[in-house]
Each structure stands twice: as structure tokens, then as C-alpha cells.
Image (cartoon, rainbow, N blue to C red; front, top):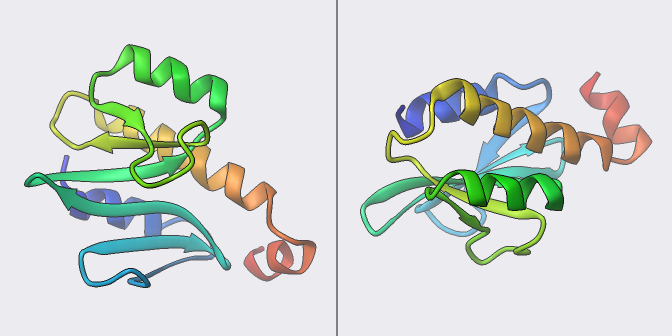
Length: 116
């Protein structure tokens, strides 16, 4: 699994866009104005940070060593996943879907309508 394929999958979500508000080394993927994914490299390892329900986040951390509390993010609502091949693509896509859905649900009505 490459960071490029994760980026393509994130950008395939309705209303998504990318930018670099924190510099060239951290790509942010948004739905409307809200961030649902951060893609970067740390210690020469690509990683993705995704929003997550706190209960699910804790379960994922226990299940996968590559999943840790969000790096520089709210530790109960964000996970950072090291892309090291230990998590299968469908599971990563499911995590992205969950993050997108959580963030989309939190959008204001006008923003939701602009995405739909």
C-alpha cells in the first residue's frame, strides 16, 4: 500500500480536496472545509492520521501495532497509522471511510448541501 494510493482513495470521496496548510511535508485532505486525513512521512515511514470514534480508535490501537494515538492531534479522536504493510488495504480504506463519515456528519448544513 502506497501513500499515493491512499491519497487517491481519499480524493475519490465526494467533496474532497487537498492542500498543504502546514508546509510541504504534510498533505491535508478535507471534505468541504473540515480535515479528515493528514498524510505525511515521519522517521522515513509514510503515515496517515484519521479521525475516529474514541471507542473504535482504542480497539484499533489494541489490534494493530501500526495504529497509535494521533500525532500532534486529539489523542482520543484521531489515530495515526504507519503505512508499513501490516494493515491490509481494505481495512485502511474502511478507516478512511469512517473518518470521512465522521467529519461529514459534523459539517454545517450549507456545507453538506454543497458537497451533495
